Image 1: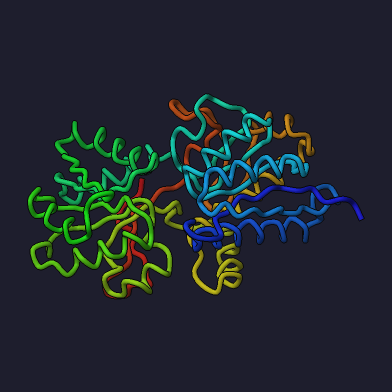
Image 2: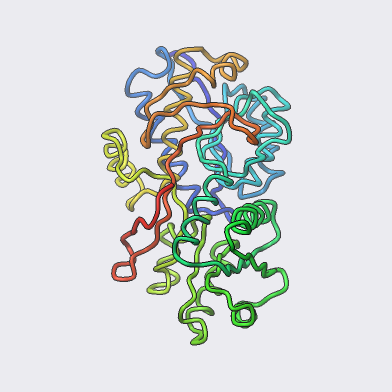
Length: 357
């Protein structure tokens, strides 16, 4: 038996990581590996995932990258949380280990431009500007953000403010390090905000904030939003019931999946026993790209990294190619699809597409 070609997979599988996103990401990675192996592997060698749980911990992720590099993996894949992916990307860059990041959106994934890291998900600046366009189109100009301290949330707030200010929008920051959910309601009334964006962790404090706002008669007209995507996960609907609906979020899917996407969706649904999120498609596409690169260029790490600009792979959500995008430090799939969607109040298990970017 030929020795396997190993890919290190970084995935949040335990709290405080977003476990549901981690399971979807891993399901996509695993499905694609199985299909690669069913089709003969990498030039006759089986493809194998070496999975490490990051638990949303940057230091744990960096240590996992060191370990996976010592184990001899050809490349790294995965990670959902931006701050964790940033730590992993810094170590991968330092060690000369190719890393195809599946889901993290922080623009500055590395401090300096790097040849070693490529990314499938759209950068935060592009996605959150699409979200800001949606807010303006829906008539919202006084927008409060309930934010926890984090590079990711601070970056999102800055993108929104820089984009909305010249277009007549105001961003009001509410510090969730000091405010209770009830106090958030008072602040929204005082500031005459028409929208509240939840730039906070799930389920806490996101779920208590939603319950508090929904039960406050003074805020019956306010729109809540969650650009980072918390409402997509099934647990959101379970915990909030009817209150889970009409909270728009970003997801990275096209209006119509390709034939490949339709087939993969059915296989993921069977594997997950629920509808796959966009994160599962990102996982699948990550392995599809790496398998293509490994078949064409072998397992030498430098040759893998040198191949990013020549990638042209049919993914579940479109043709994947990487380019150098101004302001982005890694090789970037520049045209990943972006939607603003919410759960339908009439049927919270169904998603409505409200805006595309």
